[in-house]
Image 1 (cartoon, rainbow, N blue to C red):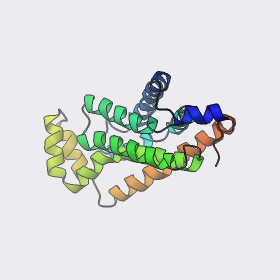
Image 2: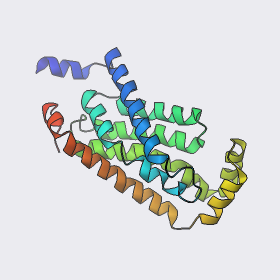
Image 3: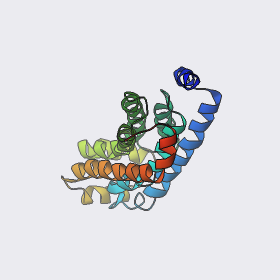
Amino acid sequence: MANQTYLNKQGLTVKDLVTIGIFTALLWVTMLIGGLPLAPNPVTTFYMPLSAALLGGPVFLLLVAKVPKRGPIALAGILIGIIWFAAGMHWAMDLGYVLGGILGDFLAGTKKYKSVKMNILAYICLSLGCTGSYLCFFADPVTWGSYMLEGGTSASYIDTMNAAAQGWMPYAILLGTVAVAAFSGWVGSRLLKKQFEKAGITA
């Protein structure tokens, strides 16, 4: 027990960093698979944050269980933000994942990464990062459209988005993402219950 306490007080090791890298890649793949069916369509793209959050809960919770130290969630958010930036996503989405990861790490850390509920809340924070681009769209569609045009998005895609946008959508996007991420985390907690019990993670 003393050895375990000692290890938990240490910073991230090389093994931890490798684990974080692997699970971050898997987490990003779940976001890509979940979001890909909706993102290409300018009408359904508004709901991409919901679908992107659907599959990653189990992967995220397993990452936290394997590296229950300060840093893995923040690093995952930063890495995912960098990957999306390299892929040409809107800066607000990239920044959203970075901030969501940092906030999620802080929240999960308040319970020493041993609370399923707080870990799920951390996943919700990370998942909300995807909403950043859409919130910017509704806040200032002209500036958002100009930025995306410069990045290679077609004018017809943006025009269709503008035509499909409704005032209630930002609320649906935010609340829907929270609900889907919470559900994904709950499913992950059920699937990985035995692993969590061994790691001392409780509800």
